[in-house]
Image (cartoon, rainbow, N blue to C red; front, side, top):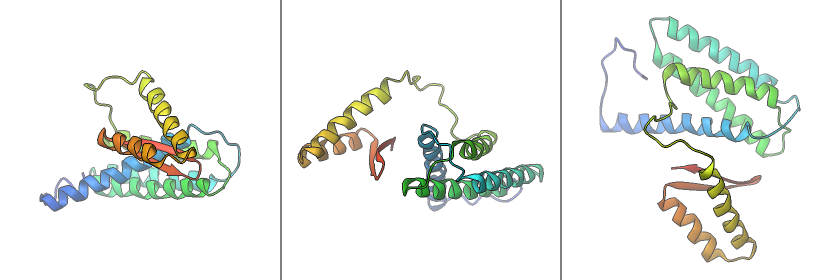
Length: 181
């Protein structure tokens, strides 16, 4: 998708790795959106982000209308992903959260992703009935207790066991996050 359909496709192991890394960056922004949409906030700190999101979406639509230029369209997704990640860092470092404007940016990002067809749900995957989140919250709370008691061996064992199971733990200033590897 990062090559125009009329251009020759440069396929190699290196290009495949680059595409995987690019998709991981886009998924990372999607994970940030999931995380921030769980918060509440009435500050007015993301108006510029919402304005940028509108511009990225407008340019995305123009690229798609221009002979289905997915390479240019995806570059707009990367631009918005960068701004979403920047705003996330600001919030992590104390900026008050602005749900209303952030939601506009999130909706623009997800609209682009839907058009391109990334982040589609795997229909063969079992539906998440909330049990996964409940179990992960419990396991993370056990790890947090071990850390509070300075039982580093147990905390590391939990983290390493989750990593082997394909779950990454991220300790942040605002708490612990987890995501599938």
